[in-house]
Image (cartoon, rainbow, N blue to C red):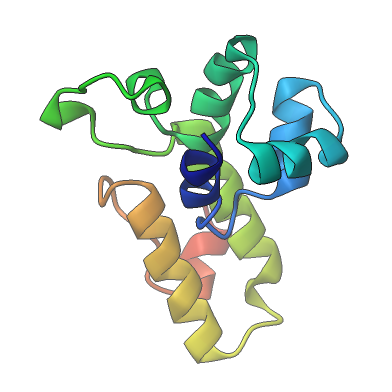
Length: 122
């Protein structure tokens, strides 16, 4: 389970504090999960929601190809909100990196803002 958690946390928007908050646990508990891999199954639905990974992925159950890991819309919206807030402070290269990350997290669905002005108008 530690490997699953580490893989899910490769997403730059998923931080130990976010997972701790989603599971109503401490950051130290999440760090312990990363070390030991022992996560109570009662936390899996919250982890699935917070990471956008389907519950089947966390349980190692075969998932349909259609249910490939996708970030839920509220996470994608939060990412866009953060991008908009940070946009004025970023270089063009960093801005493009954020756009690419957001598109990846949203599963390539929907229209992404092409520039800072378009993002701010959303």
